Length: 92
Image 1 (cartoon, rainbow, N blue to C red):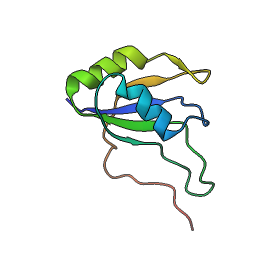
Image 2: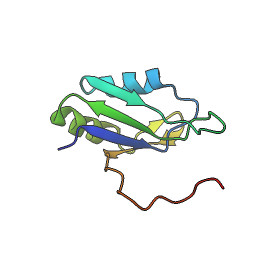
Image 3: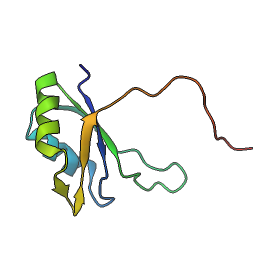
Image 4: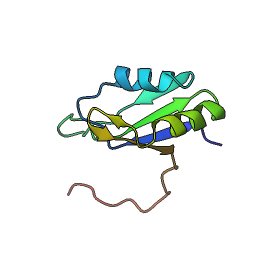
């Protein structure tokens, strides 16, 4: 199983450090990243958190999925790899 989690519906006020501390309650956080919009630099409202072990990732899902953080019910699930090919968008 993949230990990388997708975390959605995050408050734009939440910091990476706060998110990492939240997940650290369930085990060792290997990495934590909150993507930002390349044009505005603003957070995009989701993150990826990688836990060191599968059971820690599963515990984080059970403990945090649907939990209200900063006034928003977050969603936590196993991160799915990006589909290959297809592209789209782009600037002319």
